Image (cartoon, rainbow, N blue to C red; front, side):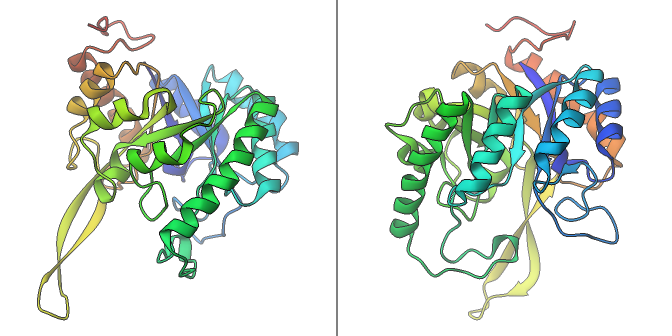
Length: 306
């Protein structure tokens, strides 16, 4: 098993600072965030993120991405792209960039739910069957282009989209070539929507289980009430060791499902300063992997998978 960091979660660092810090801490790789983003007065996860490569002009940035990643001795766990499956031009660009960098795989977003306001968008009002059918049609095209470029396009399990669960993602991709399309199983997102017991969900994905993201979340009781006077709960991101998800149990499920590849951390909690947070997360992941019987590359304290 290898560990990397998705740079959506390192907004205060420039790309050079990110590779320098993560390499020094002992991470195996990095997953670069690639998207055009809004400016912000202070660096944030989704706007003003210094460790994000703009999609505009991406082709000109590829030599710099390759150089600083290689010079730091880091590998790519993939690319964190945000191109949506219905934007064929942008999808083809990120697939081509993934191939040129040798990053192997890249996230290609599915369509949001018809009532979703994710990213500040207006709800489309379209039904789930309509959106699912459209996403499948687009992903058939995505699969063909991924094959053309010799890479893999990844569907992320994400709340507010047509693939919040492993079951929905398997249904979406079923029949497409798992050499060129796959699924990112995401512990934290599933705590918000789409939860299924990890081991059977991972087994259900079968050959489409391509990548794993780890973050954690918790539900908190707000001081609000619904119109009937009922309690209102809200989700928030939590440190890896402080959320609802048990990482050791999750890693045991990964081991039992035969997954022993990249695990990428995207910790959106802010309770601990960034450098301390990333270093602490790596230590925590190594302990969790050892307890789950997973061998960690380059880690003298790892144990063989049993």
